View 1 (cartoon, rainbow, N blue to C red):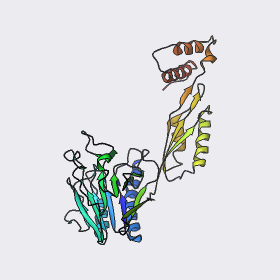
View 2: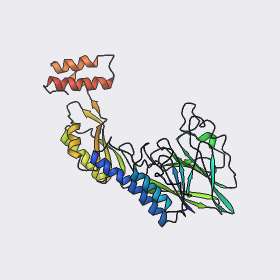
View 3: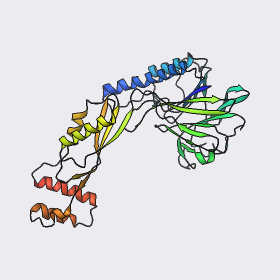
View 4: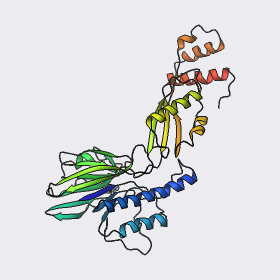
Length: 368
């Protein structure tokens, strides 16, 4: 029996932080299209159920297009069961006006709810609860599972070893061990992660279905589960599925002396990494640059903006200063460097930055 585990689709997300108005509108449509493509994949693979572990939508006010598309996807597949556990971005009700909840849409609340997905000698039971301030400290102790069943548990929150008194959205892994969980289907973390829970089960975040910004790196998609009731096993496989992914790419510019040389370093790195032009790419400049070097981030970002769907260049370089070069320098520059070096209040990084700006000012350059 096959199931899909997805989460954090964030349909109707505005995405205007990293994208232009036009691209944000396009990307919004692509997110909804990917949800529909996932449903078509489920049809082809004869998937029996879809687990949505929170944040199906991104905001309180859902567009009619997104609302109708999700309702249509569910209501036109009566043979497929949808388990929808709401997350911190979701609203209570997404059904179009006048529409009743389809029989194949199973919801959860603030107390544990369990559904029997299959009963073929051995049962497949799917349990879930929506975390809130009132229940988060009690959910682990109140979870009761039959160890003879194959048990899938759905939660939406941040994994942690222990429950947190002041944070409702925490999944206390330590308290869930030894409960008879075969697969803990989680949502909230936007990147794929699968780890061992205990000797019996594993926990998994499928991540976002699609990349929405520079902070969501790596491949995106969903998890396909294959449940064998005779063997009482749950096998999981991550399915890369996104139209566009995100890339975090470090570029060592230690040997670069100019913006032009940095451009060459970025190009060489991009070719080596085989970065798709339709993706989100963030280039991060790293290394130690010489004091006499120059770099213009505004120019770099303008130069590269058409090479990818959306791209950003940021700077994490440090300044390399050999103070011995200025020990006997009788010029105003040498005196300035020695004066800053002797300052016991400034950190090494602050000294380097101050020296760089000071020397540029001494050379007549306008400092912004």
